[in-house]
Length: 92
Ligand code: HEC
Image (tube, rainbow, N blue to C red; front, side):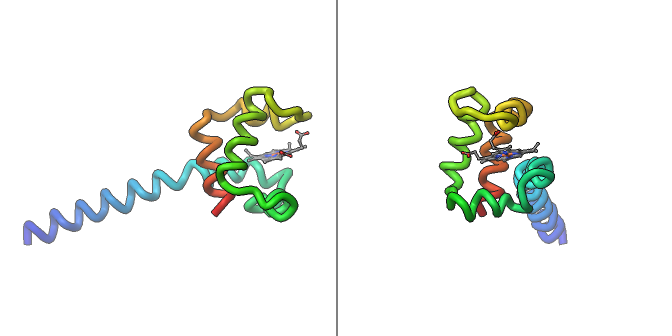
């Protein structure tokens, strides 16, 4: 019985930490939907961006290495890790 409870706790911790890892990208993506379609389909279809390419673009926008009107300001509101997380979520 004790073993079962311990297994259940381990499973709970394992699955809940998975959820925590996935929340930021998804949560951040909500901030993008107002201008881009859900999952940024407009960007993906137009350019077929890979997760890596998307991450690089977002980081370049943040560092002012890519010209933009508004995306530079938006990306500055997020950490590099958060931008990579949103790129991973969108690129799924
Ligand atoms: C206020 C509207 C707005 C929001 C919110 C917004 N974007 Fe954008 N996005 C734009 C505009 C406008 C452009 C065109 C580039 C520019 O002028 O800034 C763009 C361009 C892009 C591009 C393409 C850059 C390229 O290489 O052409 C990507 C990728 C992108 N946005 C991702 C995102 C992500 C991810 C989010 C959420 C964190 C987001 N955008 C939120 C307006 C927005």
